[in-house]
Image (tube, rainbow, N blue to C red; front, side):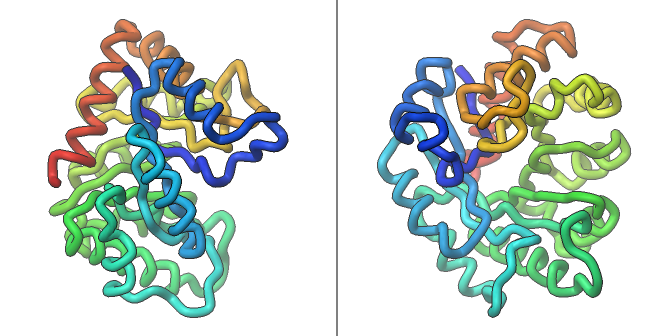
Length: 258
């Protein structure tokens, strides 16, 4: 069985797919995906994500504010703790740093990230970290704020082995998305061979980044199978081992602390 450790069921264009959300979830289950983590990126999607998670035993939720999400008033640590208190919420994020889409004085982004780390530690729920063109600052903040005491996952990882190793040393898992299957992802594929199998997660990040052979189409949780198949081929191990290990890793990270 498989787990899609990071998807955005609330953001999929179901009209374009010509189906309802239930059909997408059912297709994932039929494709061996036993659990999906629906990840929050804004504060106004919290109720929607919780409703999705509470409607299906195969879905969990996370709550967080994406580093690029504009907002007038930043949520306090206390506010974040309240938001992630729901039993269906198993992670805090996605959160992190993104210097690709944001520029100028980004002290607000760093403060937002730090607040999420404090909320995760107080709530005893792992972090879901987004980082883009900000690997040094991301790692520095995780270390400075003691994020290793709660751990988490570097979601949709696209960085080098040095960054992966430092994240692993901070008690984080490394999650690979459909990007891993792209022909030009040679460096990332080399990293995926080096990460210990007991620290790997797989994800779709749907509706984005559909894997080969669906690249360019709307991504959905059932396509996490293609990521697992590619990972197995890359590491020269069986698909069954990848499925078993990544599923075990997911439950160890997100449920063992409960």
